[in-house]
Amino acid sequence: MAGPVFDAILGHEVIINRIGHSLANGRPGHAWLFHGPQGVGKRTTALALIQSLFCPQPVRLPNGGVSGCGDCSSCRKCLTGNHPDLQWLELQEKKVRISVEQVRELAHFIAFSPLESPWKAAIVDDAAQMNAAAANALLKTLEEPPPGSMLILITHHPGGLLPTIGSRCQKERFFPLSEEQILTILERLKVGKTLEERQEAARLAVGSVGHAVQLCVKGAIENRRRFFRDLDALPDGGLAQLVALAEEWGKAELFSMVPQLLETWFRERIRASVLSGEAHRLDTERWLEAALRTGQLARDAQVVNLNPRLTLETIFIRLARMQGAAF
Ligand SMILES: [Zn+2]
Picture 1 (tube, helix red, strand yellow):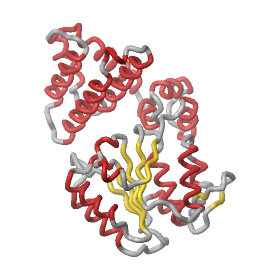
Picture 2 (tube, protein in one colour):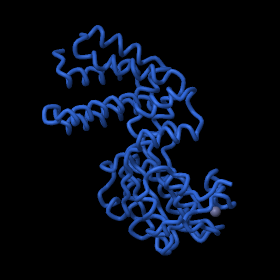
Picture 3 (tube, helix red, strand yellow):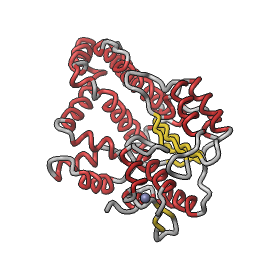
Picture 4 (tube, protein in one colour):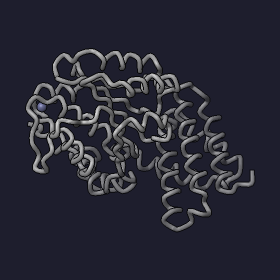
């Protein structure tokens, strides 16, 4: 027995309450935008919403909302990705953007009558990865949603979406999870070898359970320490050291971790400066912009096979100069 799908989600009570009540009223929105940091439960909540929408025997929750039962054939098919009335749209492997063809196929899918449930549904993750043509095609579907259809867009970068898309969706903003919540989830998932390792991962993950899981993977915590130490040393180390570090982190087994490591390094720098009241000196806006640019560059490098060492030299020089390096 899996039990009600919303019961399995930790945190996000306000959002889940709102969703559960909109389902209980029988008037859920036809388009939703779930935004907030990566790895905090947006996908899980989107899936639970669709399970609850499709479930033929939904459960009434103590708060008055409605939840999918989690046990019926419909709930299980959604979970395993085998429900004929639910489609996920994601970035295809080796592609940089979600294409207009993918969005057209999705529009076609939700326009046809459902096969097993009263609704047709689609989840787009990450919606900010749509190219301009794809975004415009999606906008058409949002402007004239087929009756009985539901679309959920997920992104950690809502600024990358057309404002006209956001304005047609019911927006739900997800916040980082607490360390205790992350620790509980890690224990449920049985990842990490020891309690100490799980605790350190929960602390370092800054609210993202997805990141905490990655940290529990062998050696990840040590690699993270090294990366942070190397990046902090960039401005004082000179060009020769920078080139050596680019060579080291450009090795295949390390380079695949760089986008995520860069993201957390930036996040911690920005957070530390805000906490210490230095935000006015650090120019937070400029750092956020640099975080997005370098993260995207590192990800693109993996997709289109740019030379890892040269990509990292570019990124490291930019970061060293942002921290006051003279070269
Ligand atoms: Zn069910």
